Length: 598
Image 1 (tube, rainbow, N blue to C red):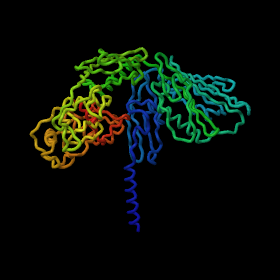
Image 2 (image 1 turned 30 degrees about the horizontal axis):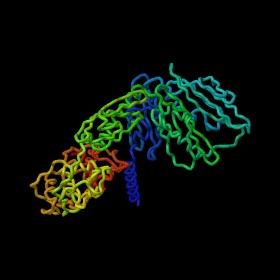
Image 3 (image 1 turned 180 degrees about the vertical axis):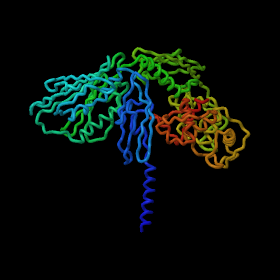
Image 4 (image 1 turned 60 degrees about the horizontal axis):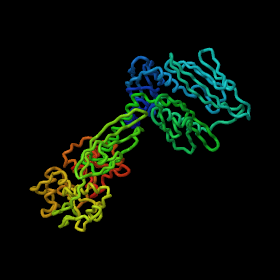
């Protein structure tokens, strides 16, 4: 019996040891919101990890045992080793405590870390007891205190270098009174003010805030401070999204600088101070969180960089969405840059392209210089690009071979398609205001595509794999005869036999399975992208998962090709930015794409 018990205990010990071995390993992100190479905020050093007690060891100078970070100044950044011991595991973090860059940063950071909970055990909206006001802050700063209403909060010295905020409460029925308490942080000759807005509760008031209300307010404050650098704000506020039945509203002290939605407008010359208030309401009970914010003015280097970035982004955008060496459609020219610059455009030849991007195609190709200028708060940047506007052809369509068809045995028109008088319309179902009209007619002119025998083009029809192969070979000058097919579903007497055989020998197509090409199957958008890259001999190495919201739906073999063609301006998404990789590609879409790669 004793042997059985011993065996059970041994197995239990092995099981427990195994579980412990697979416990999640502590990461630096578990104790800090900073990077290990640039620590600026205090660390959160837990007492336990995965149910096991943790013992911490630090250097005690730049990082104390409670996680307090003491940043050096004016010395350089300091390397520190932090060690956590838990459950038989020793985890060591080697971090760099970032040095302060200026005295201003020292006083601002010290102010940020002093919260109302450091000076009172009461709620900031209902103070009943005296306040403790420290005379020293973090990083060697000193603090001076003053009261906006000494009759309610009188600041007196405690004789030890600190202060007491003596609270005088009003009589019952007189109501609560608000007082602004100011802490002035100073380090040598640099100063920074921080304000606390405090409500003094009337005497004998038997009232406490509900726990869920105070907990939500404190959680919101912690999230808000973690996500925003409130004393050096350079971008829009990130307002925490907390799901709750408690009503929350935000109010800005200066909507011209920071709106209630957190939109920030920075000044060209001066830092701006704003009080941002978050109100919490549950039934008839309310409380608020008051946050002082400093919106930092633009530096000269930022003012000079913003218009340059906007110009380059706009040029990259129109280059990506259009073929600059074969333009046939109007350009969309934005008047506001991504960073808010005012943008103007000018054309070297307004008879060929206006300053708003409207083109007029002539009888010959024409090169036009398009110039874009961005202005941001008086700082400007200008850059130009050359664009070739393709001539407008009015020749009729002639075909003697089936270029593309709705079925393998379909024959192309035996006679030319003659446009009627007046508006030039080559096909009964294709007017000149169709978004792909110029692209289609360009391919018609070059005998890459044609119409059906009922004088229609059917731009919305799906394209089969064999139809796409023929169009692609002709558009990229890859076609040559004399090859044999390796596919069992490509008959030797079919109209597409030589095209599929050529594409296979040149490595443009590989088939869908074993010896099957997939004749008669509509080609997907992603497969079309892969074939185009192969036909053009484009190296596809880069994958950018942010180009389309549905990027994960693109098959692995097609991701490189899709990204490459997107970056080259050959393909783009739908009106919502989605690529829809598995959708069938239409005749109009193929015409647009092939006209860009010809």
